[in-house]
Length: 200
Image (cartoon, rainbow, N blue to C red):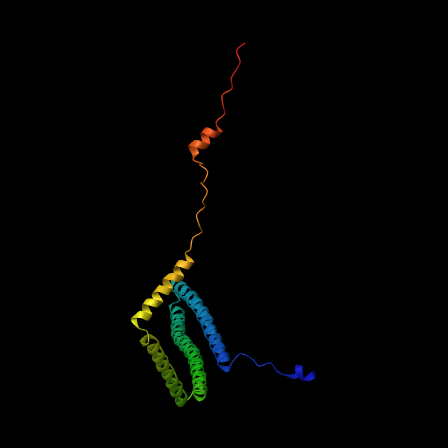
C-alpha cells in the first residue's frame, strides 16, 4: 500500500514547455519595461519644456540627452522582444515537427508488422487462389449455359409462365345474382310513403 503513494506522478510538462513559458515571461517583463520607459520619456519631455521656459537650457539639454539614451534602449528592447517571440515560435514549431515524426515512426512500425503478417508470397498465393476460383466459376457458368438447347429454353419459359399464372389465380365469381343497390333505388326504397288523411 505504501508503494502506491511512493510513486511519483510523471509530469506532462516537458522541458520545451518550461522553456517556452520562461521566454514568454521574459517577453512580458520587457513589454512592461517598455511601458514604464515610454511614460518616463513623456514626463521628461514635459520637464525639459518647463526647464527651457524657466531659462535653464543646460539642465534641459542634459535631460534630453538622458531621454535620447532611453529611446535607444527602447529600440533594443523591441529587438529583444522580437527575438524572444521568434524563439517561442521556433520551439513550438519544433514540438509540432517532433509529434509528426513520432506519428510517422509509429505508422512505419505498424506497416512493418502488417508486412510481416502478410508477405508478398502470401499475397501472391491468395491472388492465385482467387484467380483459380474465378476461373472455376466461369467454367461452371459456361457448362450451365452451354448445355441448354432451344427446346430447354422454351420449356423453362413455359414453366415460368405456369408458375406466374398459379400466383395470379383469381377466386371464382359467385353464381347467384348480386342485389341491386344503386343509389337511386336506395333513395326510392327509403323514401317515406305519404300518409292518407281521412276526410271528416
